[in-house]
Image (cartoon, rainbow, N blue to C red; front, side):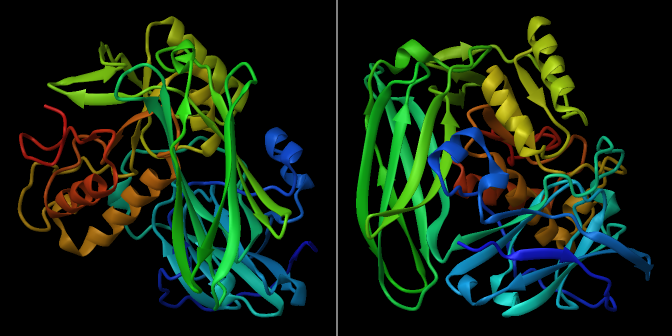
Length: 435
């Protein structure tokens, strides 16, 4: 496959209102052309991956403008172009060909976009207008460590018949004798007509032994998505319990085949175990899990972050509580370390948090409900497939309570059925699972 071309350019446009059209919410992943590259995470060896390294061109209207060109040729007609952006440092407006297409007010949570509907054949201009957030009250006294701007931001091309998302868990069976892999693979067909594809997976235990594999064929109607569910039994799983300092991980590979040709690989790691919350306690393997938690955010240096996590383990902590969604490598690191995480949306607004009047706090201002839902969705879909996650938190406490927090809780409970949704700022109200 020919790589689409990115280069810097010097052009900008006037700020205008933008829709949220290209924003998508899903597990953060890329696809690889070869299995060995997927296993080693050799992104630069994958033809459909390109780092986002824009040129700063101007400051206008209070925005710093960063621009790259995206050149789409005829070979890319059968591909979708996705854009992942993080470490912006501020809120931003996304422009494509001088037209604003999305506004992002959350300066800390990574965001993903499907750009293809906005791109044309030939040269396209992708511009980021970095600016102050219009909702600064939602991240009071929260600061990210200094990192290189746009670090780990990238574009990648994926066939229009491809894996769009997945959901994975490896947990005890009902008899508590072996493991049960539950892998749901969502495949999207963005062509106009019914297409046939083969979806496969394999899983290796922490000692490298192949435990199960399967390849299933599925037909997908044009302009639609369908889900293929794998539910194999994984024997001897109790030899590799994950969590509370125990880090053995299974290796899972999802792949697609069409007409006998392998199309894409998606590598995953999963730990065996199940965390539940009931009667005021967390349970792990049906035994009370004594949660020893501490606030912790990823540092600017990955190696130092890992050292800090290992030191926290030695001091008796088994659960990290970040202030806002973290980079993907942080959750990968916690998976590898056997460290639990209670993930938290970037909602931190302690000022006047006891004011229960409508509009008295951001949490009870209906005009902000979509922003609250956006932040909670962004947090949830990025980290939900990580073994380290044992709960989701709506925001920092105190951040008030009211309509927006109610809606955020209801939405999160509608999609998350395994782990608790918590918020310590309810002051006795119903929108938390913790007593």
